[in-house]
Image 1 (cartoon, each protein chain N blue to C red):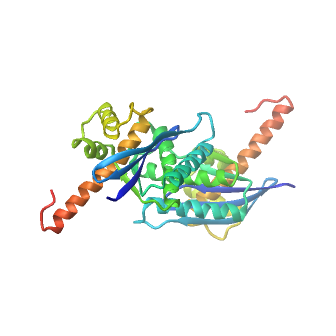
Image 2 (image 1 turned 180 degrees about the vertical axis):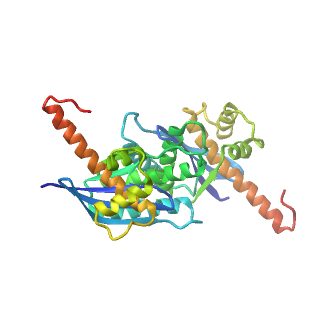
Image 3 (image 1 turned 135 degrees about the vertical axis):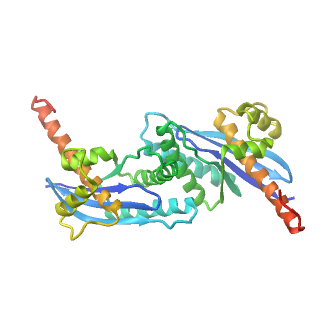
Length: 175
Length: 175
């Protein structure tokens, strides 16, 4: 059975969560999870380079077939949106440079793909990751657990897409 | 007399304005101005790579001593802020990778450094660039004229800083 390796990335400037899973059939195996962190009080360009180099090295090491990344949403914290946007820029660049296809999901899509509805609590998603991937504890910080959830979200979306496609090909209706 | 080469950059995802000036004493000479453009309806990661490669090539060609870039401000267009933030990320990365020091200025600082007050009209700044640099016409699009203004802003800020420094060293008061 074919195995798909997915790298999930939760973008940020101080902490970039990264989680790699292998999906075989409908089951997942955790391969790697950690955070790329950059020190505060460091020039932004230096932090961006650390993120770019750090993620580039992880992509080269784990050779994912797909990179799944959370979409950035506008919130009330202007500084955060701009800083995370800049970090996201160099993350997308690292993926593009490595030639790995990128898939973007909203936080709502991540929750829905994992639990079937959009109102799941963060804690619930984290517990689910721990159980589903057989981890000894909930990955810390939250960004790392989120990155694993984003990776699994892509895996589940593919499954749904494939089953939708197969329904369509049989002349059925996709709900 | 020493010459300082400054590259000004007006960040964007569709258009990145770039202007290079040489500053000798208190006079400026235009060396280059143009826009890096990326096609719409193209994956964002592709556009970010075009910007990163394009700016990297210009930095390598013109070897600026300093890169001056406009600070990104929060506005009501969420999509724009996120897109420009991502572009800004790969622009800062290209500068950092080339080892060129980066200086950031707000639009207000650019206006003040050029005209002495913050209420100058965009058109006025553009006319000033044309006259100051002896250009045949106002550079188009606006982003390119802005990039030249951002470059000159850095040059003028250095002048002010140096004269402030020299006043301080003489035991004077910096206003």
